Image 1 (tube, one colour):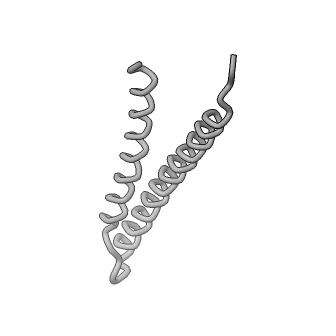
Image 2 (cartoon, helix red, strand yellow):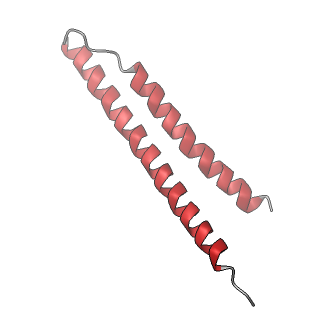
Length: 81
C-alpha cells in the first residue's frame, strides 16, 4: 500500500481552513445578533440616531446561511457517494 502524502496534507489543510472559516462566520453571526440587540436597546432607551439593527440582522442571516450551506454540502458529499 502506498500513501499519497501530498494528497493527505492537502486534504488536511483544506479541512482545517474550511473549519476555521465556518467557525469565523458563525462567530460573526453571533456578533451581528449582539449588535442588533444593542441597537434595539438604544432605540428603546430613546437615544437619538440609533438604528433599528436591521442591517445587523441581515448580516447574521447571511453568516448563518453560509454556515448551514457548508454543512449541508459536506453532508451531501458524505452521504451522496
